[in-house]
Image (cartoon, rainbow, N blue to C red):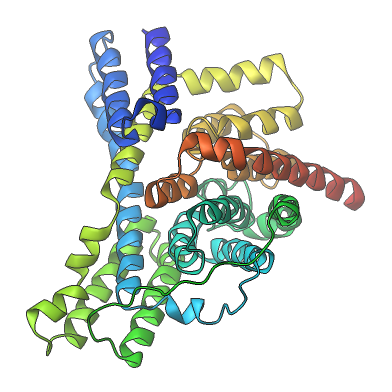
Length: 420
């Protein structure tokens, strides 16, 4: 049974990776993969609580999906009001190298304050406005994924893995920030430096499409400020209420829904509809959400049949060196979801709070996923929004992400050597 599930996962993964060759949408493949893995498990299992286990995993997956839908809708609503023009108007340079630095640093900083998933969604919208040419835009977005994952790594609220370690009392916020900031910065800077050598020339400026509806400067500024505030409020809401992040993003979406209804209430129905949340929801990329659902269901099945835990145990017994184990687990998180992988690892070791192993795990599981486009939530979001293929990312960005990943890890160890 376990062998069949693993074979199904590998076949499904390859079809997703070669999506353009097979001409099959990755969302359909992912959904089939997720359902088939659980079907094989159900037909060969005597576990009477299998449905309860599936429901438990679905509840965790739904938290991510609702958060993704809420964040994407808020971003679409800001875009409908031309809110991102307030950012793009400040970016006056057309030099690709300068733009790449601006985009990467912005993604790095925003990810630490928001989280890597939300940052990826916001930056995908911004990049689309300043980089009209598709190939250049793909390359910029590849650096956005690397920078967002690196930026989220040194913040207790920037990535789900650091949040897990913080909540489980494995790491304290001050340790996460002080010990991982420099390695994370190196992880972002090294790929950026290599890209600066390759990227040259200027962006060809084209006329941007303006919304046909009338939107005043005050309304544009209000919706942009309110939308950004709602995104920034999510980690605050989580800290105050201890409720999951999706509750905070849904609260923010509710606030924006009410506010947009009020400020546009005097306009006719046709005009008001252009700026409504209902219209923004129709523009969200539902296929990418379904793709996320299918992939996470498949990974949840691997977790349920203890494939991930057995893999972690195998690494522990066969390698032994915790530094190498951390690096390998980080690279594995590019293939399977880093959340169950980290959860399995946390269950294997009983190191004290702020132990160096937990620091290494926070860095590796937070940044290793950048090596493949479906290895992180940020990558999956960008993949869905811009339809970047697995093969294009692997050929053009994966090696940059890997070099940055290794460079950051070496910097972490050098930092510890200097301190000690």
